[in-house]
Image (cartoon, rainbow over all chains, first blue to last red):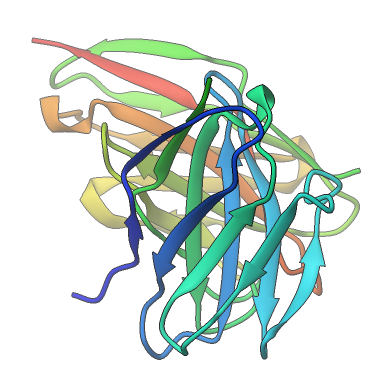
Length: 115
Length: 113
């Protein structure tokens, strides 16, 4: 069964460093998403991506964040200068249709720890 | 603003007992409703979804949920839980024309042998 994969499973970085979280969505999906979950809190929407551009982003997704689909298979989330409060589990998701209509398939997540 | 409330952070039930996890949402129109499950070290798996029609929705793993518009609720139920059901359960709302879903804080289910 096709699935969304994410690498690495755990990333530890120093404050101020850049990190790139990688995702491989399901191959025929068109819509891509990043969510995050700070420990003990709810899963929060960060950004959605369709047709090679951001379709919606939350207030969390500030200038320190960027997304890219560099090669037609990977979907990446970059944090330019990490802060302590960026420590969280980051989930990638993909879907064939818009979130309100179709099912989003989630990856297993990348746990980011900022020291 | 749209929101999802799961009032129970932890629930413990005995294996074989029935289960109900509560979910309330805040949204002006009829939303699209989801329940996801997350096992340790795993991603979020969709259990079931409600878009329209029959308000009682059947999902995978023997779960069902009932949409009650008057109560703005979408509670998840299972008649008899198994030890493998121990996980975190998230209720979520999808907003038409918006390209995201909004999650509740989750309910962690513990199963007693």
